[in-house]
Image (cartoon, rainbow, N blue to C red; front, side, top):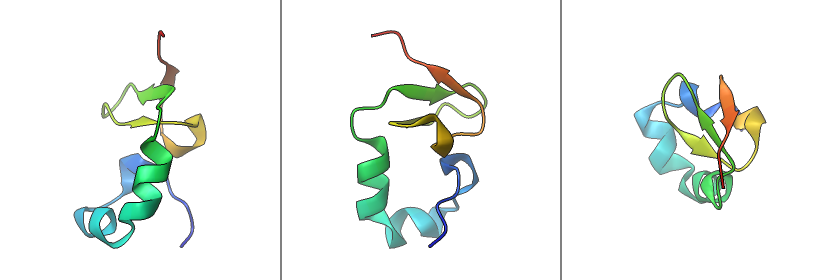
Length: 53
């Protein structure tokens, strides 16, 4: 599977690739300003913003 931004994932992709989703969202450092999703690396989000720790 080509790794797409979480913002573009459909409902089916969450269940089909649950292990990958858990890896991407483990200890998030960025949050998407557009949709509110969080991820470890900014490449997984369409409009990432570094989270305040």
